[in-house]
Length: 513
Image (tube, rainbow, N blue to C red; front, side, top):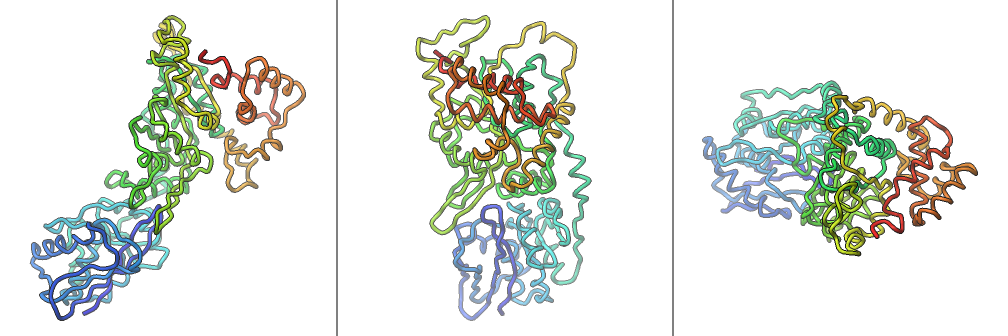
């Protein structure tokens, strides 16, 4: 008997419905066809054990399982449950196999019939609804994630018996319901960190506020223990809250990568990713035989923090250049091309030299002559060119550390950032791919960042006196525009330019010499 069940395969951050055809016929042995990988081929052994353990039988005749479309490679163990249900229907152990056409079934089977979680539940649920299926049956651990898709019945199951009894019409399953908007809004404002806990470092807080308001990349340069990592970890607390659309985009990426906790729903807060400096090219950017998202995609709509930047392999840093500009990464394979979103704010941190004490107010640098510049040269000019804010971090004095006075809270700073982003949303409404000042093109820069004669003279003087490089010019104008937005000013004033100039430390010709 030939029956069809339906599953789903994830490619990139999208899912494709897979038709699982199971046919019992005369002959012997079991076969899976349709470009299965090793994990899919092993599925029949798991299915056989799960069925026999629960007092069902495998067919005694030839069994052929086809995963269609047959020209797309199928990977992973998530087809186990659909193959098991199809096998039962083909061997006439289900009462109503016609019911199978209304459901997508996904889940990995243990040998005793318990069901393990899968990756990519959210994109699978979106595709299931789009293609008009009545419901989605998947592991209980993934049910809340899938249930955020409305107008789709999502059933969470923990054992194969629940699914069999449902299709034998012996028992009903209850769909999972979640109040997506309420839980999303509740989780948005809960953070483990706050800028109020930071003593001193007012200039660094200001620089990070500008980075958040304009979407600018920043690099923090300072000695060990100055607070670079502590400050970077608090940046997500002042970024604007995720919109529901942004949360869905971010959740899809984490779902595909298998990074969502069990029984979780939407990612409500902007992600903060901090890979170790030993990370490989593929782990950072994404890839592999079956392309998976890397750290830059997991940081989509959030912050990517690279601590000890010069310690990263140069090849790893260079592969980030194109994704930073295009805000997505394209991974090409012989039979597929996958796009992963990668729109993030890059925050990097580094010591100024090998010993860490170059420009320290009290400790002397012990590096030999020329080694400071050599250390800095580990970061290529093209990568540094994509970083708008260069901020020198100095140690906090004892008097600032011991003060009982609390600093400005993240919620207060966040309100200013949100107002600045609202101004930019109106400004770039006509440009569908531009959302903040950091993303301006050269053409838009000339139209939007006009400055008066006094500002022109100030900028010219700074370029000459401080020996700033030519690439600093555009960056200064973009940062000036963000500072003006934070001040609720339509025009870029000389004081805005003056503040922006001080954030170009590493562009000075004499820095590190």
